[in-house]
Amino acid sequence: MKALRVSICALLALAAMTVASAQDTPPAPGTPTYAKDVSRIMQEKCADCHHPNGIGPFSLLTYRQTKGWAEMIKEVVSDRRMPPWHADPAVGKYRNDRRLTDGEIQTIVKWADGGRPMGNEADLPAPIKYSEDWRIPGPDMVFELPQEQSIEPSGVVPYREIEIPTNFTEDKWLQAIEARASNPKVVHHIIVFVRAPQMESGERQDFQRLGRGFLVGFAPGVIPTVLPEGHAVKVPKGSSLIFQMHYTPTGKHEVDRSQLGINFAKQPPAREVITATTINGDFTIPAGDPNYRVVADNILPDNAILYSMTPHMHYRGKSYEYIAHYPDGKSETLLRVPNYDFNWQTSYILETPARLPKGTRIETIAHFDNSAANKANPDPTKPVRWGEQTWEEMMIGWMNMSWETPGNQTASAGGATIGAGAR
Image 1 (cartoon, helix red, strand yellow):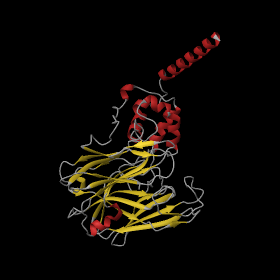
Image 2: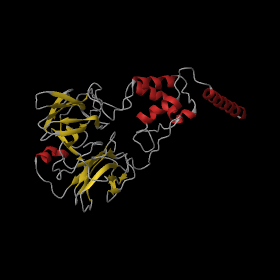
Image 3: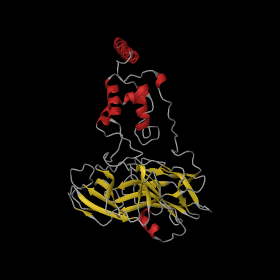
Image 4: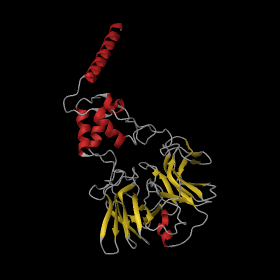
């Protein structure tokens, strides 16, 4: 037995020496290194999700972490499964486009196949520091669910709507907004709405329809709202916040006490950012149908500036498209998502905001796959209608915009350029 232990120890020591030797061996000419090449790709395209307390299942902030996952990283980037991005690259340009270039993919593959060398540590970029709590800079104010929410191990959990007064004695303008789940394992999504004391009527306000009052959301893939200078979201004095909580049981008893963090704008903005939608809730997707089409539209009552679009469906969602039909008879595709993925609720933020004239009809076209070929389909043998639960369906096209001429916008209380969520 003693001899066996000595032998095992010798083998382990030999393996350690081999690894150390491999790390000390200079990379072959032309082989990318982590320090000079791969680390920068990880920081720019991966670390935003893959950091402690991020939505990624592991961190990719260091050489050791990245080296350990090198084979998997090579596979998922070569297949373009990661980073997640589902918009058609032939349509539009987006500020938050997460796709890797062909050159970046080649760099990762060559590094993984070339021994995964560290390279010269002096070539490393400055590390990114992520807060363990908030992703927006230190919130000026935090609203928390007044009571801890208890979620049973199984069963269907109806949506919970919890109202929290703001106690604002004057109108407030918000520059950054973040909904934060205290227990992400059980929080399917959060949507925070603003309930103002009164809502004035008018074409602009009516145009917002379902989007009216939307403030921010939390769901997989959603990033916090951080608005550029001169843009902000208005919360009228005396408003309340409505937390819409969707919980999913995990098999054991869970608790949650989610929060909302906000940063105030330093001064009233030049433009108020609002949220509007196209929506169609009157549909029935036949059992087994692989490509069922649903259409919705909305007409602009004034000249507008469009910042971002967020398509929303559930597990049977297949594709989604936004088309602008202009008053002069011309049409333009603003966004095409050929491979919709419910697991990633992405807001597609236009690199250059689109100016849309009064009378433009925004048409959204969704296709649903209710067949057995859809691996995410809960049950292809049943027809599907509109509903709040994920095994039901929705068809919503969120749009975040402002009016070209500010005018009287005091009645609108919702919207965000970044971070539209699931509903």
